[in-house]
Image 1: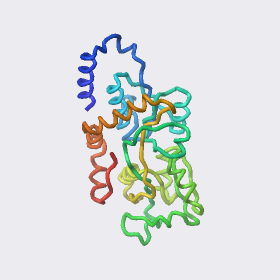
Image 2 (image 1 turned 135 degrees about the vertical axis):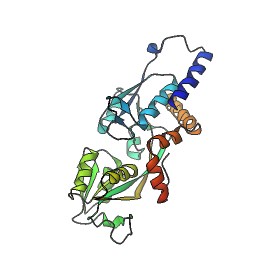
Image 3 (image 1 turned 60 degrees about the vertical axis):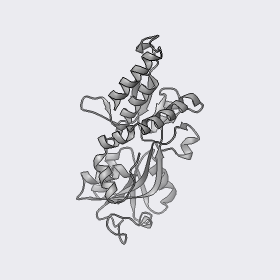
Image 4 (image 1 turned 120 degrees about the vertical axis):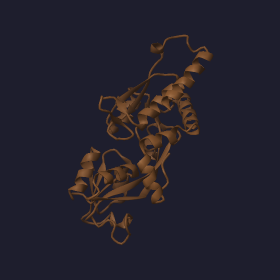
Length: 270
């Protein structure tokens, strides 16, 4: 897909007389992402950024005829980096929330997802709900411990809705999963894809409770007032979807998830 887009846009540039300067003279599009969230944002064995968000950023750069530079930034530092001009965009599986909209602007959504729970098999979170399902009221009980990742919408949801259960805030996904597998937390509240993936890695210790407690949308973050760039990004997202780009990324990176979600009747994301 990326190679096809490159050929297409190179032809457009030549026909439109865009060869007035060299590529090095074009200002790079600096994209911030936290490269600790596979398969969306991660680092390959050669130390290079890879994943769905990386491919999406590169396709956007080709659409805008701009080289792309990826900046690896901890998730909690992405918005400050955007506001101070260190980066031009955030493409890092970031949920568009009313709270974040007070600080930054967002593109049109490109992915829909929900918050789910990776539960310990002995947690009792599924009691009375049937296999693979969850009773939400089982989450907020005295003696319960729910792990969340710092700076995520899961943390915000937990702090708002869990008044009796203990909320354990951790900075890494792997740390939260470990709390569940070791029985120190009853569950890990995170996005559906990660819950499914982590259950596949720990099938003997966990249950994937995929029915969402909250539905969300991911979008690209921009500085407020960047109207022209936002319009360009939205035009790209529309084009990329219509040309099958998102379908391709889903098949390339998330084939097993797509099939698993279809079996339980949960709509897929893009």
